[in-house]
Length: 69
Image (cartoon, rainbow, N blue to C red; front, side, top):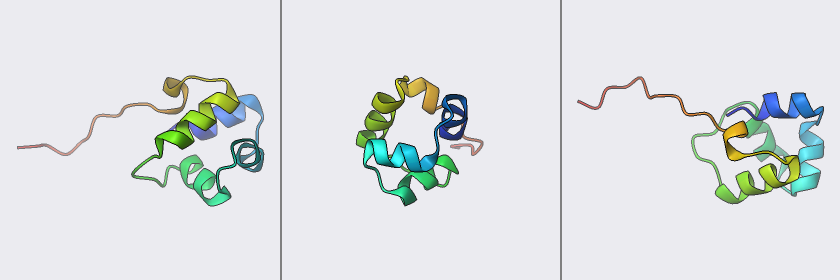
């Protein structure tokens, strides 16, 4: 989750993103601080639309360290 990086580059606050997307401040904070295990796709859509970015700007895949043996 690279939301903090994208917001910093655009000089946006979490509060502004919350207002523009109508997403609860707690949800924005959890995304910003990488405290989520699941992400609402509607939220990602709103965030990308408002920030004018692609999903790949916000999300980055990291391989799971746990083996699946």
